[in-house]
Image 1 (cartoon, rainbow, N blue to C red):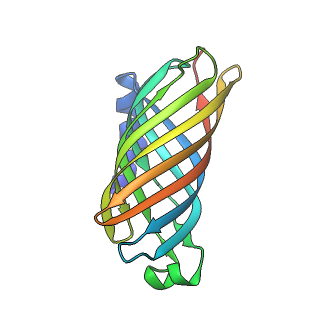
Image 2 (image 1 turned 30 degrees about the vertical axis):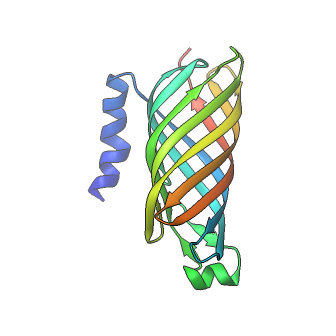
Image 3 (image 1 turned 90 degrees about the horizontal axis):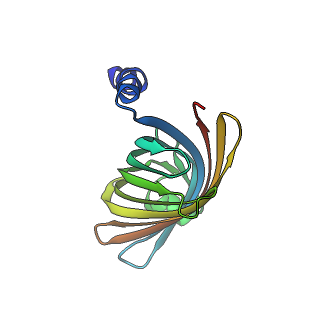
Length: 170
């Protein structure tokens, strides 16, 4: 419980003093994990990501990423439930960068992460493209991405669609 207090109250205040922004996005993910013995496990569900990063609005951002804060993946078939269980956690901790390369609302996101998938651990990467709709003090970002991860001898991939809300001081 102390960890949640630290995450949600102390860190944002410190980040604001250092000109670091906290951003959140919600996404739906479809995961396929290919096991060494040739079997596949399929999971899907809603997840979310919190970013603590330096940001120049509509130019670039970079910093730390934590996913998910809440949420679990659900097995999509009987074989996946048998190999793991019906619901499990997928976590990614890492570094992300976001770039608006065309001086428009289109952006690219790249990230590298340490991953935890139930009892397996490893590393992976994310590539995504999105569009942020600017309003007066609000940006609404729609994004599609592909994640690849390696958990020992097992390999996984995920596709995701995400929505993010960004509040800006103008």
